[in-house]
Structure formats: C-alpha cells, structure tokens
Length: 382
Image (cartoon, rainbow, N blue to C red; front, side, top):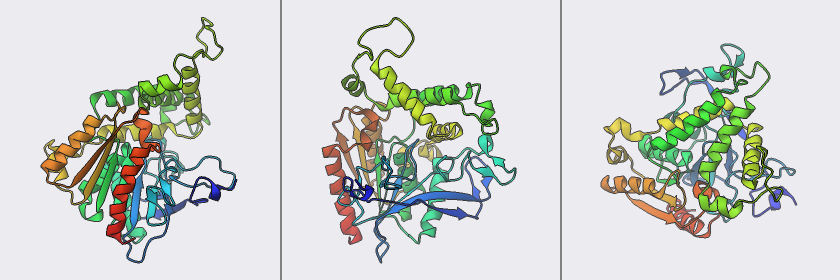
C-alpha cells in the first residue's frame, strides 16, 4: 500500500532545514555562532497566516511528527494518529510546523554535528541547552517562515513544557497553548530517574568521556540501560500487567540470568533498537533540559506570577495512570493559571497506558482535542 494511502495519512513528507547565521546566546552563558534547524511542515499556510501550529516534540522525538519519508517507509511520524486530514490537528485546515530541537541528533545542530572550530564532532563540548533556548531558536524559525503568531503551540511531555515556556517568554506570539501530560517542573523522583539513566551512559567504558565518535564506537550498554529505565517510567503498572503479566518466553523457568520473562525481552528490544537511532550525548542533554525546566524560578518560585506573563488561552490534559507526570502536576498549573486570571480548560483522561497515553488515539482524548481545535479553527477563519 502506498504511504499516501495509509490510514488517512498526509503521505510523503520531506524534511527541510535552515541555517541561521545570527549568534544564539544560550542560558548556560555560551554562544552558538550559527546553527541549523531541521523541520517538517504539513498543510498549507493561509493568506492571512493565521492558521499556523507549532508542534513541540518530547525527549526522544524529532521533527518527523507525521507522514512517511518514502513509499517504502514502514513507520510514520511519531504523532501520525493526531496529525493529518480530518485528524485532531487537521492538515486540511492548519499549517503545522514541527522542528527538531537544538542538541538533538536528528539533523539540527547537536553533539553529533561537526564543530567548525575544530573540524570534529562537538561531542561533550556541545553546550548545555535549555527549553528557553529552544523557544528562542524556534522563534527564529518562525520568522524565517514569515509567521507572526502561532494559532497554537502544542506539545506532550517535554514538548508540553516547551509550549508552556513559549507562552511565558513570547506571550504575543501565540493565541493558544496546549500542554499535554506535562508538569511545571520535575519532581525530585523524576530528576533521580534521569540521573540514574545518565550514570548508565557515563559509566559505560565505550563512552570515552563523550568522545566515542573518534573511537568508532558507541556506549551501547549504557544507552540501552538508560532507555530501558526510561521506558518503564513511561508505562503504567496496569499497562505492563495487561501486556506481559508474568509470561515466560519459553513457558518455564530456567533458573538463570538469561531473558526469561516476556517483559524482560520487550525491554531489551526497546533498549537495543533505541541504541541504533539515538545519540548518547543527546540523551544526556535532553534529560538535563528536563531537569532544569522551572519557569517559576525567575519569578520568586511563584508559578502563578510566571503564568501572569502569558496572554494566550490554555488547554491542559493529563492521564489518570501517568505517574511520571501525574494529573496532580497539571492541576497545579490549572490552579496557578486561575490565580493569574488566565483562561484555561482542563481535561483528565481515564487511561491505563501511563505517560505514553498522550501519543495514543484514545477516543475521549481525541474528542477533547478536536473540540478545542475547532475553536481555534473558527478563530483563524479556516
């Protein structure tokens, strides 16, 4: 079946890129003299330029949010279920942009890019980037595309935090913010999970202080363990029980340390496949960006004061079984928005898939998105 005919897909998409020559001062104090952003667009920008949406990706995501890269491509973009003709983010009505964050390994400037100052990979010398830095770089992309204001900035997980940062830092540049399965900052437990994952990578003998490119190797074991740990936290206990229970691969216990349970096999597969498509230095950077996200810190640790800087309307959504970014964290943001006298809609979705539920076409969840996006479409005149 042709990619263009699959499940109402937008079909074949081609990544684009733009090189920015204006130096980018980063929150960490360093400066990127120039940088590249890779991005994809879906749908058409209307004459009034009022129908543009920005999609922000999560930790291991990228710019490929929907469609296929070739007729032979078997795997669509990471939010294929939500982006396309007649879908919640309807490409018949909206012009959708999704860019790959700085520091990533999927084409935008990051650790696996060549440092022009040395002629070698940046590796561990690539500066620490923050969510705020991503917003600044995406604003430059926005201006390159000739867009003055987003109809909405949308994201789940880390992407939802980025949407929130957009609303605070660039209040005149968006009319709506959709933050899904997000939080106003990480809990100590979440920071702890990220640190264990980083230590798995840093302690891998093939990491070589981040200079593994020159050694023609990768820290496979460390990155695999980091992904396995992270993946456990994205799922709920109910979801894992329903999918695996305590099923044995061979139907019997072998009294060994080989893979015996189906869940062990699944996690190892997830870890091994992740190693082949992600960069260890990028994983370190992305988890640090998560750890550092705390917009209230600039406003006396008062979240309502931080959100008082915003001008847009908000939709916050959370999932009952998401224990990594629990509904309580979304309700915390709702409370702060109400205190800041901002317009906010909140939806708590009954779902047993855990944190990963934000990627899934859950009926009620998609009904909420459709209803909210209908409002945005009417405002944009599309």
